[in-house]
Length: 141
Image (tube, rainbow, N blue to C red; front, side, top):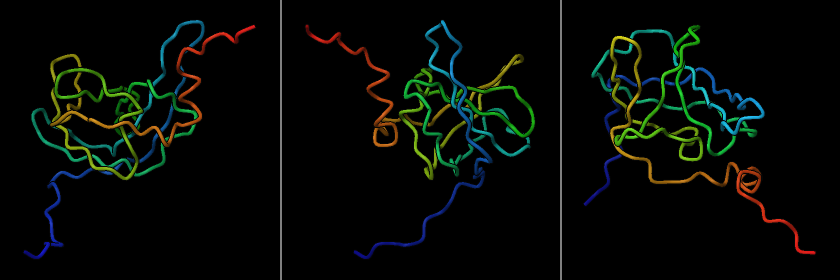
């Protein structure tokens, strides 16, 4: 059977405009936030959007940073969550990758929920940061 080189693209494909990392504030242990900015527009409740991260993820991003979206010039953040409701962390996403999401809103806020769980770790990108994020045992004397 021949392979098809033609595949449909989601009708609502959205390519990010920028990707930024904000470190958590000391002395707390918050992991920081990886913010992916989407083009201005309306993202309707219950609608599917295929989001492509078009820019590199900043090298200083910690692997446990929560992933959020911003829209246009608005600084409001909307979390990216797995289908089971848990936050997606930076280690689970990659650039130049399409993520199928569905917008879920309520009166106060909203989220972008993945249509499936992410089951991978993009540790190659954060190889040097991975050790710094883990508990490091004290050196033996």
